[in-house]
Structures are given as C-alpha cells and as structure tokens.
Image (tube, rainbow, N blue to C red; front, side, top):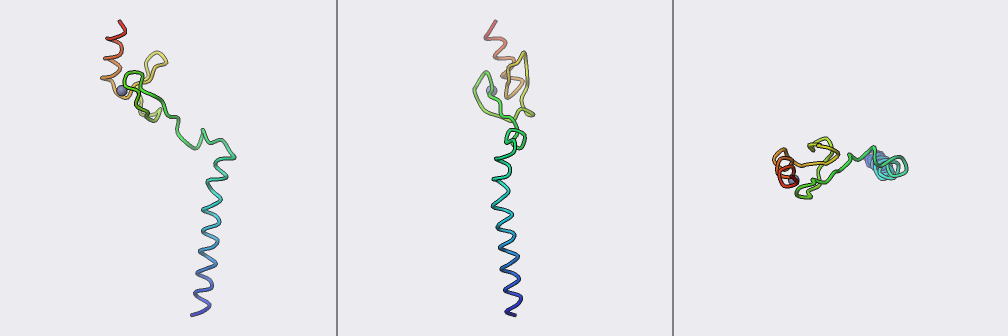
Amino acid sequence: MGKLIFFAIIALLIYWIIKSRQPKDMDTNSPSEAIEDMVRCTHCGVHLPKSECITNDNMFFCSDEHRHQHLESSK
Ligand SMILES: [Zn+2]
C-alpha cells in the first residue's frame, strides 16, 4: 500500500510539473498564434473572436445587424 501511494505522489508531481510548464512555453512561443485574434465591433465596441465577426471594408462587426446600422449611420 505504501508503494502505491509513493507512485501516486510521483505521478501527481510529474503531472503538476508538466501542467505548470505548459503556459510558460506558450508565452515564450508566439502567443498570438495560440490565442485567437480578438476584434472590436466598430458599431458597439464589443470584443469577439475574429472568426466569429463580420468583416466589411477592414471594419469588424459583432453581427450583420450592427454592420447595417453602422453603414446606415455613416451615410
Ligand atoms: Zn456590435
């Protein structure tokens, strides 16, 4: 039983070391690649992932409704 606990502690220790190292590795590499680009809605200013936004003439919008509203207001 003592051996089992010993190995469990070793396994936990290894797991903890690996887990605590991973965020540091991501920071030293390129963090912009690991974290998705966030863009700001031109109309309401809300932040959202670039893949979820609607793009129009280098402007980003959170929804098609805001794109329409912004284009209407800028006319
Ligand atoms: Zn918006």
